[in-house]
Image (cartoon, rainbow, N blue to C red; front, side, top):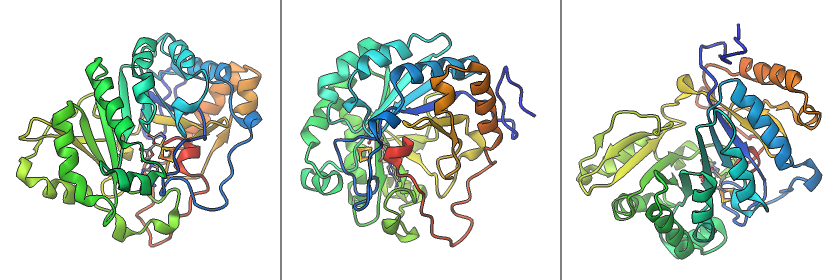
Length: 330
Ligand code: SAM
Ligand code: SF4
């Protein structure tokens, strides 16, 4: 039974965290995120307006949400994003607003983000090799991304996290390079297991490099596991002997569902209770009507539908999620 004031789900997990996708548009075309055929962008009218999202955020905050991550698509390509973020950071009870970006525009926006109240950033970067980045994302923006990472770290955004999806025979030879980047730029480099979302054809158990394997490959850096803290998120972090910190995120080999305190809001106004399940609850009309009571009911319904854990690894079934990460908000 849920308690409205605290918004607790049927497994005792307290709702604290909301991930908002502000757009499905992106200036990259990452191979594992955007399918290479039959890909349709949402119609502009179907995308929530900033006012709708701010209303949603206020209601979520009344139910106990105190951290919000803004993602996409690429959030920095949406017009008016800085102004929106400065309003979001001012909502009562929201202690932290974080942004996940591909980093390509960060060198332009890092200071504006900081001034808007965004003090934590996640940057997705799967390779440090320009030609490989071009192959993965469709563009070679490696220098711009590194410039953005360095700038964000130097102006005091803490922590800056660099997230890399590690795929066998694709970028798994760069694990040590990222460990060195962590020390060089004073950022946390996190390695994420490849998930069956997006180009499902490319996903197979053989392509996944599991977290344990990644740590073994970092043996020469003598990784020491760090205690969990509020900033760890789903990662287990390790201190390396070069001074850097890396994190391992294992949605497949060791899911962290029991600690899941979040809901996702898609850019077209659907609550997605679990990333690895296609169930969604459409709240767009209720947001447009500013119907707070109904919205609270629908948030509680969404929370109630959260399972105790995802079932992606339970069977040999091939998963083919209807939405890509760019549409869900990764
Ligand atoms: N455009 C921004 C970015 O790239 O950081 C934010 C949105 S993107 C969908 C968020 C994250 O989802 C990225 O770090 C990306 O690598 C990750 N992602 C996309 N598809 C994935 C998959 N199949 N498995 C694991 N991570 C994935
Ligand atoms: Fe764009 Fe991010 Fe998806 Fe790459 S992972 S295509 S940058 S939304």
